[in-house]
Length: 208
Image (cartoon, rainbow, N blue to C red; front, side, top):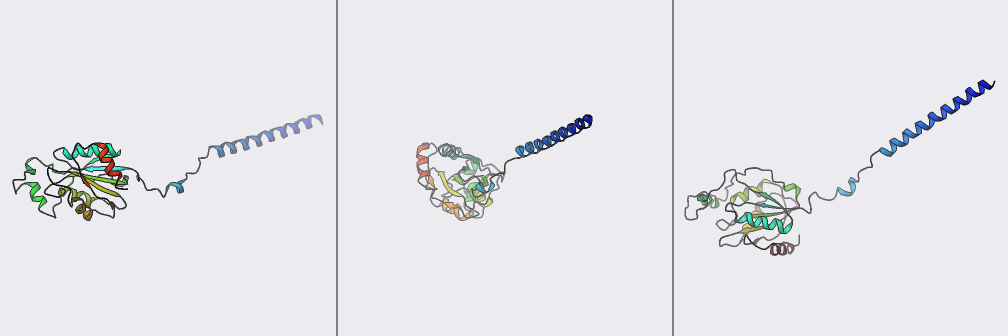
């Protein structure tokens, strides 16, 4: 009788241990499960809303210098707008009516081909276009650029360099061509070596 009682007690102890082991496994699985992501809290925030991109075109290097100064002043990233066929100094000869730039600038339909169409426009909330003034307007490759991307919802403005002309209607012209409805603010002509603080003061005054 005593032997039967001991066997029964042993069985009860074993069953109890098995039950505890099973509960422990469930607890570990529950603790290691990943917490749910709070997608609803971030879904309404546009990607790259606070990021700024300075997209520039430069042949002589003057506008490149201004673009770099602008990027430093605004904490922005840089993107170079490159033509598939690079311009030469001969292409910019103002005194020759047959030069490439002269012919393009006289043709409203001219659209020089871009070397690539991979500008990361979608990643940025604000786009600053930087270009030289050619024959009182932006180079035609800027027309190609603004027609190649969707700028819907972007903040946009322009900075430019010139040997003698002001920014004139060049930024307004690009605004009319740009794909998508963006929020445009007036652009400004700067010297390539303009102080960063001057650029930032101008930009802050736009009220983006």
